[in-house]
Image (tube, rainbow, N blue to C red):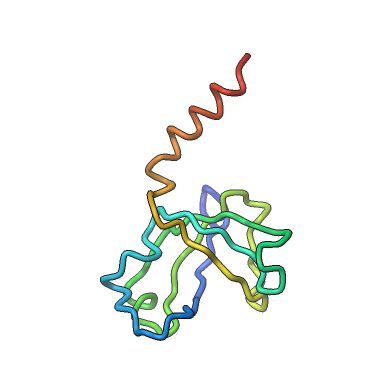
Length: 113
């Protein structure tokens, strides 16, 4: 738990047949937005958003499968049950946290009459 909400350390697998050098990879960098759903649902009815908060090297990227920390956009969406298998899709372009202040400003300006 953090001041901003629940943070969970998750381990993940990829469908890639190639070994990925995670310490050099541009995948799952801090600030990236990921969409998460249960494997059984497959994004048909449920899509939860989270931000990568940390990619620890020791005890994280050096593990097989690798480990990252996630913070959910909506604290009510947090999945803290380790028995639930999830699937995630990463945004390929841009960093959410770097542009969040501008996005919130646009939301507020759209809400004012």
